[in-house]
Image (cartoon, rainbow, N blue to C red):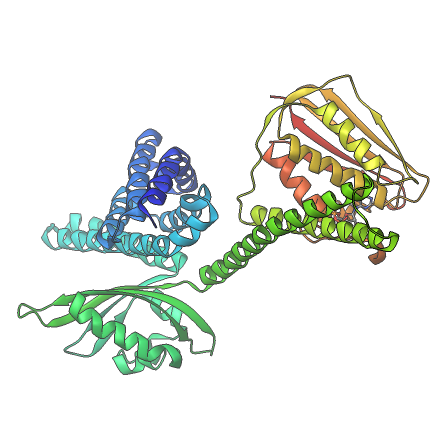
Length: 502
Ligand code: ADP
């Protein structure tokens, strides 16, 4: 990432630090974290958010810094098992949501390192605190000792619970004794009972996916030189299931500088990997859609220019040539709409769909779209009812797209000769648009389904792509509004959209 890109990303993230910290606070506020006063907890998290942003961008990546964030989080409240899980979820999503796609792709590996380091730091701190409590027990008198022992048992149970929830385990390998000790969660991740594992390195290697074994051994050997390692690999569980884990280890050297022990964590990241590949598909879709749009737009522009030349008598084309030109224009237009829909759907799926509101007259935009849609049909009559003006702040292009979707559906799903009614009016603090048809209708059990992506419930020969209502819903919700339908099978449909006026 270039220095300019880095400073752009930093600016964007800094502008979102409050949003990130608030989301982080909200997500862990339901846990026992609330034992801290809200303002204090929030301001701690704001500080940690700044550190996470700095760590995400610092070159080279600084593991210690990532761990320090985990340490601090555990110091705030290590006892609650959910805190770490929620932190990973919120930071994993919020730290990149405000960034452009290409930056997200570039930052992804660093984000994984940041979250991994943070978790390791969290557990290391929790472990140290438990050890400190153990020390306290040793030096305490009997009654006090009983009380502290109880607290310690609770702490240990919480740590085990945290590991279970976050699918995180810790381990310790003694090189001299060839003895590997696992926490309970490591046994669960590998799907083995404690008596089935003899704790030697060989039997551990036997549980690795055969294709990842050599690479793992190489990484571990290298760690004896650099002092630590971070490695993702597959394991084969006792029941044969293949899962992916992330290993982080730190080498402890004896006084002569020889490696004596390796301590580390193992994190089951199978589900996260699956999510990343969905994310990858979405990114790929966005990229393809983006790359296709540009040449298509140019092509369509050229065709429209040719059409104009023909119409003005300057161009010299036979009738057959003119017909094929019109067909090319029509097909090109349809491909462009498909590509735009796919691009929108990819953005919605990646939670990166946004609108750009500005002052506009809803009635004027609706009238324009009604006229445009009327020109696509000679067999339906479009009728509009609206006040003279209804002004507000919305995204004119997106509202136009929403209206085109609803009106073209009303035309598509109603028989010839039917009337389509479009209404715009004001109720309370909302502008309400309605689009009614007397067509095939939608049975109530499908009313929610039709707003999902690629969902189509109409007879096969009438169906489109099943993206129009999905995108319409996203447009409405991005404006803070609502969309719903009233309809029965064979009794026509009315789609309503309510948009806030302020
Ligand atoms: P499509 O491209 O399939 O029309 P949409 O997302 O716009 O995709 O609509 C999803 C489904 O909702 C349609 O396939 C159709 O089954 C149903 N639908 C949408 N509008 C209407 C309508 N006005 N009348 C009846 N069914 C409709």
